Each structure stands twice: as C-alpha cells, then as structure tokens.
Image 1 (cartoon, rainbow, N blue to C red):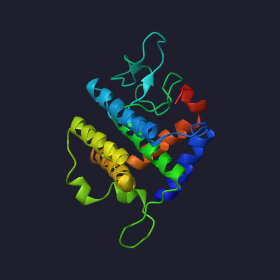
Image 2: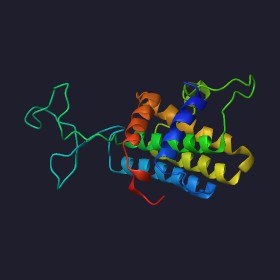
Image 3: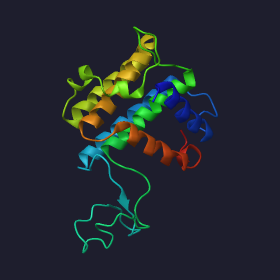
Image 4: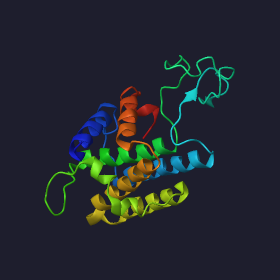
Length: 207
C-alpha cells in the first residue's frame, strides 16, 4: 500500500473527528507522538501483551481477555466473541501503532508524500518495515526501542529540514519492531484505524 494512500485515509478520518478544526503547532503534534511512545512504555511496565483485548464483564474491574480454560470463561475455545469482548485493541504494539498513525496524519496535513530518494517513486508502507538494514539494528527490548523512538521524534521537532526523515525513521523503527515480534504491522494499523472511525469527536479529549 502506498504511503500517500494510507496518509490520505488516516488524515481524512482525523479531519472528520475534529482534530484539525483549529490550527495545531508542530510542538503539539510532536508532543502527542511522544505521548504514544510513552503509553507503549506504560504497557510494557505493566507486563501487558503486545496486543490484547479487555474483558468488560465486570464493570468494577477491567481485565485482559486471556481465558485459560472453560472454567475461566465459558467462551474459551470458541471462534465467536462474547458481548464483553473489548472492541478496542490494546497493548504495547497498539500504542506504537498509534504513534505511527499520528505521524501519518501529520504527513497528510502538510501534504508530504514519501518518495524514494533515488528513483523518485512513491514509497510503499511495506518498504518501511521490510528493510533489512533497519531490521538488523532493531533492539529486542521494548524499552530501548521506545527510547530510540523518543530520540527520533525529538530530532523531528528540532531539525525542520529533516523532519520527514526523522518521522519516517520513527515510523519505520516502530513498525519493523512490531513485525519482528510476529505481528503484521499494517494489519494492526488498519484495525486500529477502523476502530478510530467509531470514536467520538476528538476521541473525547481537548487535544
């Protein structure tokens, strides 16, 4: 899938949900991307899985939907999901994807189209997480990855002339790490994007 196609779809959804009703500074955008990396860190600190859903059966206490057997949950082993199965994907990888979605939304706002520096061809999103040069440098530890993402995102704010490069670097690192951990990053991104379509104005937040 071409990055420009993905950018257009994600940015359109962000506009529809009010995120661009007023002008937003690059500082705000950058800080919100940082916030997604930090939320991934919190998921890791809690020992949560890369991707999970919440069981909403008990309104007083949310728990991860990971039944071990039928005594733990009557829906165990069944293909259908019960009414208490959380609709929102959660987890370390999901928060990383949220950071990527914010980067792609920003690209849509500024009209940035990712192209190959040598050929001038539009880049496919798959190229960003299938590059052996990136994969070989990936840290195994989520904490180290997140520190690197914060660094690249900070450089994107400070180095205006190289903003596209550093944001793409962060996106590539995040998606490559997700793939290296056995999850299809584009499929997860599209799943979260589809969920975002169902959310309220500005997701119920001020900014």
